[in-house]
Image 1: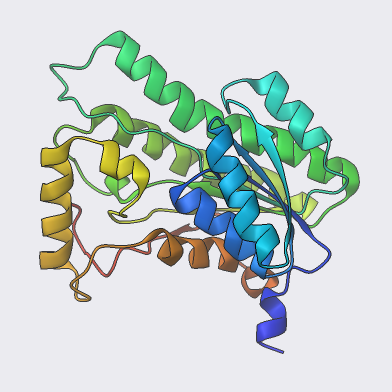
Image 2: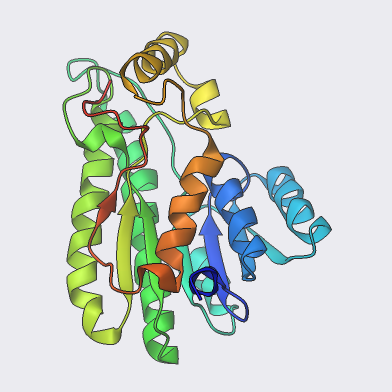
Amino acid sequence: MALKAYDLSGRTAFVTGAASGIGRASAVLLAEAGATVHCADLDENGLHETRALITEAGGAARTHTLDVTDRARLKAAIASVDRLDVMAAVAGIMHSSTVLETRDEDLDRVITVNFKGILYACQESAHAMIAAGTRGSIVTMASGAVDAANAGLLCYSVAKAAVVQLTKTLATELGPHSIRVNAVAPGWIRTPMTDRHDEVLQQRAEATMVRMSPLRRVGEPEDIAHTVLHLASDASSFTTGQILRPNGGVAMPW
């Protein structure tokens, strides 16, 4: 009975940022749990690789090449789903700059992708779930960066803090529709996104994770995907408006 709570057979999930990293790991795991997974990302080649991983394992997947900041295309992709049960809004970007160095264009880009992109995914999936009468689950991607000041991560931290407030507010508004909304706030995870980021910041973050985590290691995308699966499934049927922190037990951010 316990394992049955994680069974997503007959359900449909939509995952943004599915071409790599946490998004890919989440899409693959949701498919392993039985869901038909719609994978969305700008990276078409990465999407095809994710779909291949799913189908070769016997799962079902479709791909949508789109920018999550393009509401019209995102809405059309979600509308193509017969019945949406799970939205995992994972897509995001990183940017490092101090407060004094931050330019308008930097702030606008990060806020647009990391907050508006998740907002659009939440809004459009919620409309679809309400129209279909689905007892759905929406999972947003926040960050451990929301818990304290992080020098050099102003834009990213502000955007992710907005995601936390969005999650709590949306959980309150959608609860009467039997739709749950929760966020995942990972610690530092080794992904293609973090690999491409500021090398000094990456090395500092990874060293701090290893030093401060009781587990003495950096996180992997699969670690976060299991939290996404938990929130997507009936195992968390009485959980909404929560921020789960799979961060290796780190009490303070890097």
